[in-house]
Image (cartoon, rainbow, N blue to C red):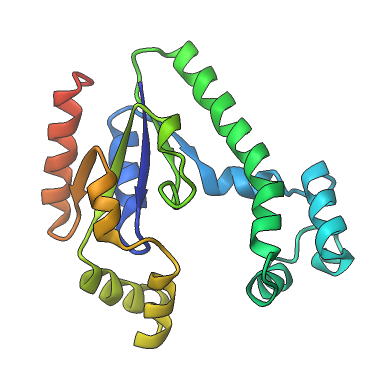
Length: 198
């Protein structure tokens, strides 16, 4: 069995992922896969350099994320081009890891942590989607505190994602992380027992 785990920025997705892993779930991290596919010497990094220019590479051959980020935000089609290069190998790796884990341990839960799951329209890949939810005003508050941002900076980051209330409507399972850690833990425990994973 697998679930896609998602949430908005500063909602506490990592906290919930850790609670699931502590109970015995396997975790596949989409962000880690995204970093792995562009390691120095990889064919994917080569494609990125061909499309965006050699100056997106650092002297050691690794990706200059800052430079690439500048291009993505200044060129109209750059983000779409980058996604066209990165998404297929990332998704292939996610599917492969999911299949391997589900085959090796069919009774275990496989959790795939995908920050922009709904934005990337990846719900179809999972049995269910679990959303870690907190209201937008709390998201803003936590994001400012966590990343030392101004209100304007935090609002800009929030606007770059689908609104949390829209995600809430699309999720199969909603974990409300706006209370205490104990309250979140209790919701995870209820989910775990309901699925017969205990």
